[in-house]
Image (cartoon, rainbow, N blue to C red):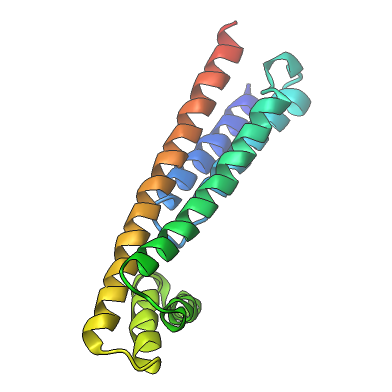
Length: 171
């Protein structure tokens, strides 16, 4: 009984932290949810000795695919947003460098770093300030779209896990 409660406690902590991490850039959201899913499988197969309750290999691969999709969509959305609003190659590289520098300044740095980087990259390329600000706006719009997609994928993962785990215990 103690082991069951301990397993579920860690699984729920990973799932909740992962979901919160899907909209906070400081936490790796979907990988934490995936860790919770794999911990569930480990617990039911090895510790609790109920291998019939484990999720299928196809489900596990589906969860892995959703993690990859979340990261691809998130990264692509920012680039598409920046390009759609006129960011040049210098602006995009500025955003990447700004993100790298922003990592060292916690949440504000993660949010403002890419925007400042895009503006500086555009200014470095000789663009007018209006063009640079428009490109930064595009980065912000793309980042917001990527966040919505990432949170949606995280919600799908948590709900999928809940339904799969519930049905394996009910049946």
